[in-house]
Length: 222
Image (cartoon, rainbow, N blue to C red):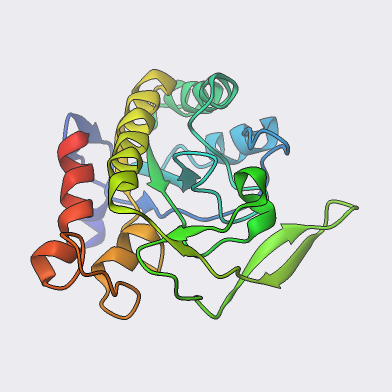
């Protein structure tokens, strides 16, 4: 793309970005715990970058169960919505636009991050064989092995879809201009899409159509 075109406006959905330089989502793990609440430092961080045509936020969990990293923000409580609203207002005041990237980390999590210390959830009970981030007693990041997940029961999956639906509604309330669904990099939606992590035999496993079913249901719910 020529530099002349790079700095021209681009219509994206209902907004018109002032230029075509978009900021990709970058996980910073700076939220307040407990509560997974965005901080004033995060507001300053995003406001400083408002000259981009569009900012896409760091990955943001749709529910307490969706959490996979200590310090990652959420968008499922009133306190989180209020904190994000201050961030989007700051970006808008500088003439920028902001999208939120929503995720459920699925098996890329640790039981200590889960409600009640339960196992993370996934399409199948297969350990990811990787690591995630916790905080030690001094608040410093430490890397630990992910916990072995439990497979979601079929009747639980509509609840996941509804959590995405509610988070999308919360994104509107918080003042985000757009929503991006994180469906890659080994997190829950990708776990359903991939035959290596999805060994289900119900309507959410097997064929490509079945493995894509959850993603499409989430899109329709939005």
